Image (cartoon, helix red, strand yellow):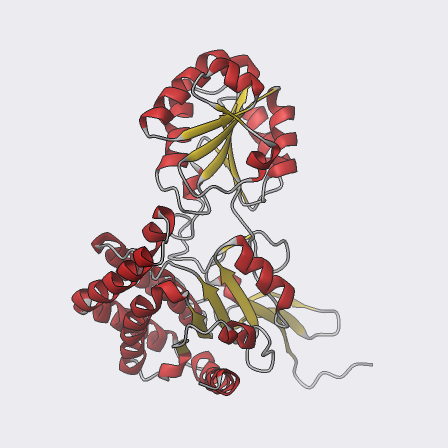
Length: 418
């Protein structure tokens, strides 16, 4: 295959389709989403069979347990994809909304109208349900999209793509509005991220190496996060039961996600009481603890942590634990080592909670809640294209509004500037 020619063709088709999607009605886009949900429901056996091929290939290629977990399409995850499509269809359409209309002294009216970005390229690894999430959000927000999944999920993604194409056709929209790259050749990624004439923004979802490469080589704007080094801080004013439940959930609910806690911080004032309880709960879940000197003195099963552990995104049953000197120590540690993804404080002290959410510089900051809630679905966005730790354009879970821009609109009645 001539990869450059193939990708140029994909880009041209996406640019043409973007025009059709942008002028389509909300009803048409919603119809496409609901028809895709029906197609997925009808194709469960095909999806499962395709995913089984990917899982078998992944095992043969030595994928670890976390990667295989991200790759698997269980019945519950297929249900989640279908529910996500229906939720996105039920969300208000942001396109065309005009806000901030004001009269200027000249007599003109000035406002801002929300518009699609155009063509969005999405590069991701392992999780085939991202294909549906990305397609649904891009379509609802009036964009065309080019999806490039990992080689390990090629069969699953193609099966899902067939359902999406069916949904688009049912609504009278071009099937090229959502294109899934059908080659595993990595050269396709290099072409996709260097086609500014066809692609308006790139969203990479995957490991740190992938995202660093995209950020370095892209000639198209990138919405990204590099990793998810998420913290839970147990304050001296924490309710012990809440602290235990939240910390265990934040780490063990799922290991292979970017919003999983990777470092637990415990105030020195309550470490003697809390750490043995926490350690017992984590040992029961077979979580390896890597602790600071004060942690190791209180927890005999903990291994000594290194500097690298404070920066690690394990995506595995491993947890770094540090005893800190109060809120100041916790904030200093987080702002030094956090990837600015999600950080949580467990406390019953309102003043300390306010300080934490004000001074911790992350895209999601929580009080008395598990970091696992940092998710577009949980935030009411229906689904998410990813979680951005950038500070320009979009930050945190990127839903419909994050896939749009605004342009100024001006209304006059023959007004001229004097």
